[in-house]
Image 1 (spheres, helix red, strand yellow):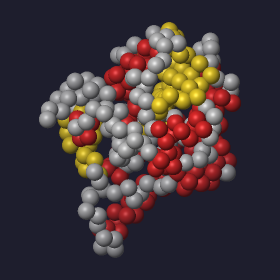
Image 2 (cartoon, rainbow, N blue to C red; image 1 turned 90 degrees about the vertical axis):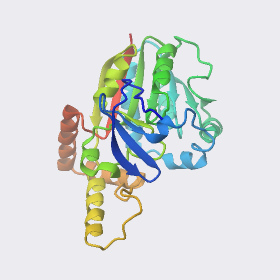
Image 3 (cartoon, rainbow, N blue to C red; image 1 turned 135 degrees about the vertical axis):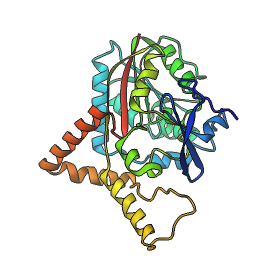
Amino acid sequence: MEKICPICRSTKFKLIGEKKTETYYRCNSCGVALSLEFWKSEVRSGETIYDEAYLAKSGKMHPKTTQRYYEFLEFMESKVEEKNLVEVGFGNGQFLLAAKDRNWRAIGVEISSAACNYVTNELHLETICGLFEEVPIEPGSVDVVASMETIEHLYDPNSFIQRCHQVLKKGGVLFLTTPNENCLTRKLIGMDWRGYASGHTILFPYRTLKKFLEENGFRVIGGETRTIIPTTITNVYKNRLKSLLGKEKKSVNASTSAGNISLSDAQALRDKIDSSFMSRGVKSMVNVLLNVTGTGEKSVIYAEKT
């Protein structure tokens, strides 16, 4: 099986490591990380992978996350004339709800029938179940395509980006978020980084993702890398120290996810930081530094169709 990079077509890769059922390689040319699964299959089943468990894992959104969604939408409102939005991979539908609150006409596209059933029947929002590349959306009819934490799950990112370009109006905006493979956390804890996870087939460094969009008919008009979770890093090093001292039985896998904290714990940590003026100031300075260096855990990108 020949390994070819879908982004730059290079065939030169370096093994990053193994984690549970996943093995990752890094392209020597553009820097994307690819799971071995990327080359093994072209279609991921929405029923077997993105079932009720997938929906439950997305969890209830924290009020500050909803506020962050409003900020994303406010930025896009300043860039487009009308408010027609398609979200690809909407999960529990909270971003669609935020869009509805701000009077967007929002439609969600999901491969998961569990997610579609929940968002349609419980939240009463408009959804289409299926692959984004195949569902019926009129070319040049959409002002914004939003896709958060989705591109890293794909087997064909090129077709996905081309479809985004096709359905957007001229001057329309593509809004993406995804784990940043070049993040400081990954550099510090290696395979224990949460980005290396089951179902994550392709992980972009922030600057590579920007270049990829520009090569596919987009102009990047905004974006940042942000976020570092100190508890994740300290937990990983504590677990490694325990293993070295023989106080913890070593896993069969060289790397585990023991250092990664839950969504609720991450939200509690954010509340604790935001409760203090001084810690909020430190957090802001850290995010500025992460953005300047392109090493935050999350990539956020806005790109205009040219």
